[in-house]
Amino acid sequence: MESLSKREAFFKNEPPTAKFDPTTRDKLDHKMDKEKENGHPETSGKAPKELDGYVGFANLPNQVYRKSVKRGFEFTLMVVGQSGLGKSTLINTLFLTDLYSADYPGPSYRIKKTVQVETTQVLLKEGGVQLRLTVVDTPGFGDAVDNSNCWQPVTDYIDSKYEEYLNAESRVNRKTMPDNRVHCCLYFITPSGHGLKPLDVEFMKRLHDKVNIIPMIAKADTMTPDECREFKKTILNEIAQHKIKIYEFPECDDEEENKLQKKLKDRVPFAVVGSNTLVSVGGKTVRARQYPWGIVEVENLEHNDFLALRNMLVRTHLHDLKDVTNNVHYENYRYNKLASVATKGKEKAVGSKELNLETAEDEDSGEKYYSVFFSLHKYGI
Ligand code: GDP
Image (cartoon, rainbow, N blue to C red; front, side, top):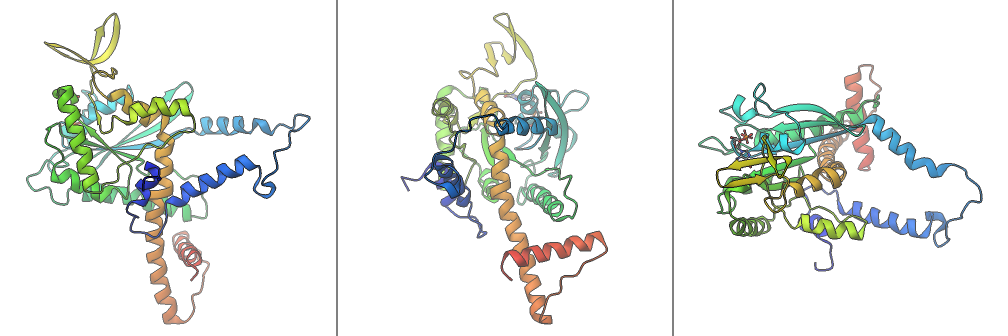
């Protein structure tokens, strides 16, 4: 196990229920890296041929860049935790926007009693790049006397988005395929200093094969640095003990960048502070929480881990979160779904001796037949 990278260990530790093997992604990456070193797969061993003139394919990355910028990006972030832990405040702080305000307060203020799933969308623009951000909140989570099954609406929501995507993929016309799958789940832990609650463990265990979970300690300003360090250790131990697979930030290609990032990665679970208030500190206006005994600056790594979280989440790993969602979690869902359709189809086929692939006029049934064919074909039935 020692020779395995953390990331491989994460995937290898306990394979998901489905037969899909996520390590294939790493193996593929490795193979592609090797091919890159050796040249084209068919010309392995030969160095690439430098051209004398300018053909123009060196411009390909620019074409991709322009296309992506034109298309814009989409990201869905889910926040889960008991009400009052500062979820809405943190979302506002993360994206420097007033997604929630006095006119439109956070979901915990509007929706109570039972667990519900609430989505809010905002289109953000920075330096000409557009990001369609969807925030999924789960007001009421863990607030009841009896919290059994309070993760159910959350799992249902995640599955429903996978289902939507699977249907869109199977459609004849796949031009517009909005990706509303949940790419990341920020799980807020109460700053009790006493480790995880049974609900925290249960939630993460039930969701870790469905979504990238990033655990966070809420309202970190309520703990001293020593208490916070100890609390983080306890949480990480419990996560390992319960074999919970949280999202592992992968290494990036650049050595220097890796060194810088290691310091940020080591801060997991991120102990964060959020604020909607601007305070003047040393002539600069910053987001901070002001107390009679001092000021907690949100974007100060000596005060809390907010900056580390934002860097890792938005600047460096947003795309990886989407990749893991697509290549691991969605692939698991898709495998299970299609395998069950295939099994049903096979039973039917055995009953009628042969399976006819019909071309249906109706678009809906057309999709159904296509899916069945697709799954049977894939599994060699
Ligand atoms: P939500 O119900 O989880 O969305 O929580 P809110 O964002 O509505 O915050 C609940 C209360 O906690 C508000 O009074 C916030 O001002 C306060 N709050 C938010 N973030 C922090 C924090 O980092 N530290 C402290 N001490 N209070 C916070």
